[in-house]
Length: 106
Length: 318
Image (cartoon, rainbow over all chains, first blue to last red; front, top):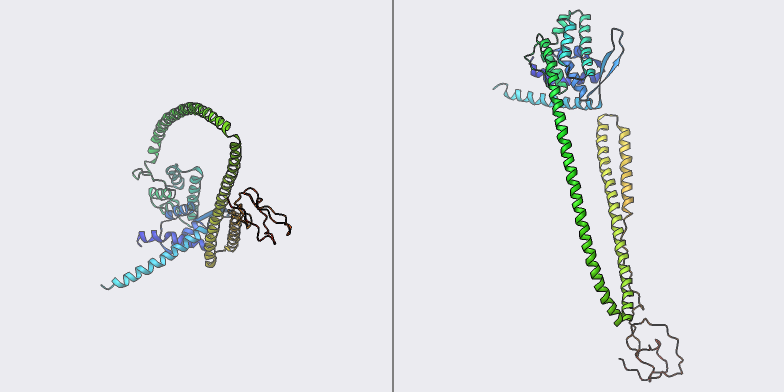
């Protein structure tokens, strides 16, 4: 898949995944990778940026399988950002589909 | 590259970040590698999944709005570059310290010059003000002397008239000053009240906007009912306080209309014009005729005309 396509929707997918439930980094990478093929190294910087921009807040939860895991939770600003991206995505998708349908058989 | 080498290289490339942030990032990737190993991958495979280290570091630093290091420095050359950088860093630190010291010296000297200039300016201004005040006092003294001599001569000529005039002037001046003072106080009070009203009006506008915004979010499903109620309460309080302050305005008192009968110039039958207010006159006996010579310019005639004195001659009006 085109890397630019993936780069464009990655933030939306990450926000929507964490919106459903709090996740830690590896779990989120696995969730996103099931939808699109993305480099795992790209997810963590994105999580860091979204945390610095106060869309996420983090907390540690003890784990029986090793050291405490850092979980990510969506803030109110993150919810608004996710809604905004979701709306923009559907508008963008619709306009691109309409364009392709109009120019598809020319 | 094994896990330890990868994490060390990663930490070296992000050493410009704060220590807590570096530890956080390294722990994240360490956990990720451990989980991949638990799922059956080797260390090398888990590290290769991250992609090139330079690209990874660029993306991590981009999250902090930090410019990534030059891509020419690969993982193999990281050690040599890091070896050189401490010396360069020390030199740079030294230069920076020198620049800082020079800049602080320049700033201190400019501040001192500014203070000296200000002090000299203040001295000059004080001296000029003092000389001007002396000259003005001298002029005022000479003027006062001249005016006092003229006033003394005038008072010698018309002492009685001056006294009454001064008294009248004093009362008029006093009333004028009182009016001016009350006007000033009224204006100041009204300005103060108007400022407070404007402040509460702004508060009301802000709370109204907040209420609308929270209501929209509440309708969309966000749990903001409490905030909506708070905004509504604050809005009502702001409006109430604004109306209260509006009632505190000090309005100019209306002028008292002239009463009938208080006109200083009274006109009665056979009487001449007087400046005095009419005084209540005792009823004159009907049997007594009014003498003609009594109706003079200085004595006011009785207000009530004589019932049986229609034929009495009227005094001439002067």
